[in-house]
Length: 84
Picture 1 (tube, one colour):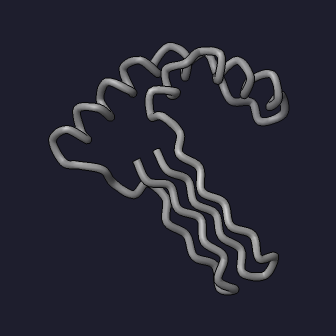
Picture 2 (cartoon, rainbow, N blue to C red):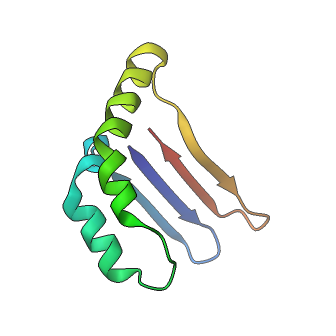
């Protein structure tokens, strides 16, 4: 998974490569749950489905190749792009 953030206004550029397999790491969901008390998201659901989600993502990538999940360009030129 590649995450790209670029802000023209602040002259900020960031590219991060994260293994897609981190989706199934339960400690990531635990950290997210610990730091996100106000949203009301049920992280137990994410912990339960994350192994199946990763398996389906792997299958999709093998059959169809990598894909862009998020591609946002704001009016002032800021870019956020997530490619899996």
